Amino acid sequence: TLFRSDTGYYMCKYSSSAAIVKKKAKSPIYIFINDSAHPFVEMHIHMPKVVYFKDAKPLVIPCKVTAPNTTVTLKKFPDEILTPNGKTLIWDTKKGYIIRKPTYKFIALMLCEATVNGRVYSTKYMVHRQVNTIYNVHLNVQHPVKLLKGQTLTINCTVKAAWNTRVNFKWIYPGEDKERVSITQRIDQSTDNIFYSILVIDKVRDIDKGLYVCVVTSGPSEKSVNTTVKIYDKAFITVQHEERSALEAVAGQKSYRLAMKVKAFPSPEVLWYKDDLLAADRKS
Image (cartoon, rainbow, N blue to C red):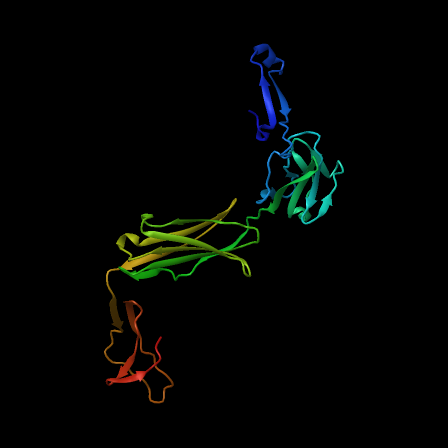
C-alpha cells in the first residue's frame, strides 16, 4: 500500500559496466501518490513546522503536493496573498514555494492553501531566522568560591544573547557525579534574551573542590566562564601583626595606621580595642 508520504523521487539503477562508462547507470523519476483527502505531502495544521531563514540563500516553503495539478496559494499570516511571478517567487510541485532572495518580510507564519472538491486544506510553516550571537556570560559567585564541608554549592551561569538566539549549556566540574548534582535551566525574555543554568550540589565534600566551567554554545559561537571552588574542613582564623612591639606617633598627628593581617574563613568581624575598650567601629 502506498501513502502520500511515499511521494517523492525514486531512482532506477543499472549495474552494467558499459552503462557506467556512458554515465547512464541511473535515472531518477518523481512519483506523486494522489490523495484527495490530503493534498499536501505533509500536513501541519495545529503546530507549524519551522523553516529556517538563512541570509543570502533561497527560502523554501516545502508544501509539496500529492497531485501535480493541485493549485496552491501562499499566504503570509493573517491574509496577505503572495503571487508567484516565476522570478523571485516560484511554485514547484516537487519542492513547494521557492523565494529566491528572501527579505525579513518573510520571517512570519506562512500558509499554503489548496481547494480540493470544494474543501479548503491548509498547512502551516513558521519562518525563523536563526541567530547565534552570544553577548556575554558570567557567574553569580566570587572567585574563588569558599565553602565549609556540608554546605550547599550554588552557581548560576547567566547568558545574555541576541533575540532569536538559542543556547546550549555544558558544565564541566570535578568528578562530574551526576547523581549528586542538580542542573536546572530557565529563560527570561521580559526585557532581554536571558538564559540561566543553575548548578547545585548539596552537602559538598572534598571531591567537589576544583575548577567549575560553564560552556555556552549557539551554532558555531562559543563562550565559557569558570571559577574555582575551595572546600574547608572547618572554620579557621589566623592573625599576624608587625614584628615591632611598640609604635610611635607624634602628638597632634592627624592619623596613624595600625596594620594586622587576618586570614580567616568564613569572613570574620574585625573590631579594634584600646585598653579593653572598643576603639573604633570602622575596620578595613
